[in-house]
Amino acid sequence: MEITAIILDGKALSQKIKNDLKQQAQSLKEKGVVPRLAVVIVGNDSASRIYVNAKKKACEEIGIISEEYALAENTTEQQLLELVEKLNNNEEVNGILVQLPLPGHINENAVINAISPDKDVDAFHPVNVGKIMIGNYDFLPCTPAAIMELISQSGIDTEGKECVVIGRSNIVGKPVAMLLLHSHGTVTICHSRTKNLAQVIKRADIVVAAVGRAEMITGDMIKDGAVVIDVGINRQEGKKIVGDVHFESCEKKAYAITPVPGGVGPMTIAMLMKNTIKSADISLKKRKKI
Ligand code: NAD
Image (cartoon, rainbow, N blue to C red; front, side, top):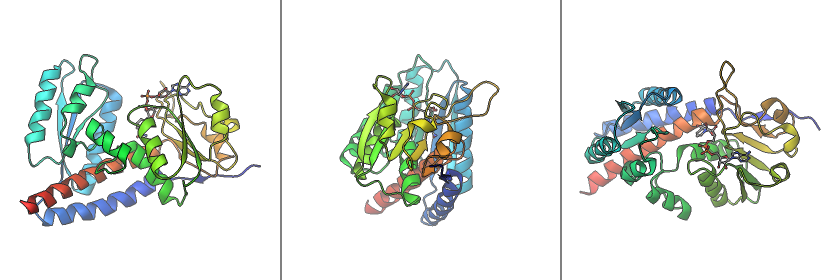
């Protein structure tokens, strides 16, 4: 049966969320706290520069101060750790974001571990990862939170649904699988060594593709009426950006689908803004207690 899927419009939803956050930022300012995000970028990765600029623009829109620390490619791990420590100790900074990937000579885990969990608006620190596992957290990682928000705001119920996540990274696959589990889905995580991937995907009511392989999920692989969430951002020389999902063929079979661009991407940035406002709010509440 050929149907036309509902398009889960991340651009429109993220705008709505940002409008709400703007009001929250204003109210925090009236109480004496100006939300502030420190954005650290090391080296000259062009995709990282695009993401950092988009995050700074969203800060501006909402009324969050963004401070950029653009460090040279040859910055040492020690220098970066010292900057993180300085930002940890700066009471005016509510959120610290170190744009990944870092140059190869810097140990990413060492840097993530150095960020104060209270300012870890990406929610990559092991303390925050552990809290998410338990289900008692302040911050959710931005892309998994974006996916859950897109699903729930579209009135899609996850309870008892077969959810198949493709990709097991620490920043997307694993945490989104945990959030789907918290929301009562029956979750399967697939990865590069999964056998019979197409068969596993076929049983899914909800498919989350987070692989980084252009248009690998095609319409014949999904069940009629599935919800398809495309996390992939694949930049190919001279071609338009595409996701991990072949949109045209999946759109004909899915109940709902996210576009790329305009789906998970803008929502991810909105979730970063949400975490920064939340961190500012927590710091205000702490101040009041002292
Ligand atoms: P990653 O490279 O860390 O992980 C990719 C995962 O895909 C791995 O777990 C691997 O096992 C799995 N995989 C690789 N080949 C596979 C195959 N043939 N079959 C099944 N699984 C396979 O990537 P990531 O950081 O999780 O990102 C995934 C994609 O999402 C990338 O395109 C990235 O650019 C994009 N992304 C988008 C956003 C956003 O805001 N929209 C945020 C983060 C990442």
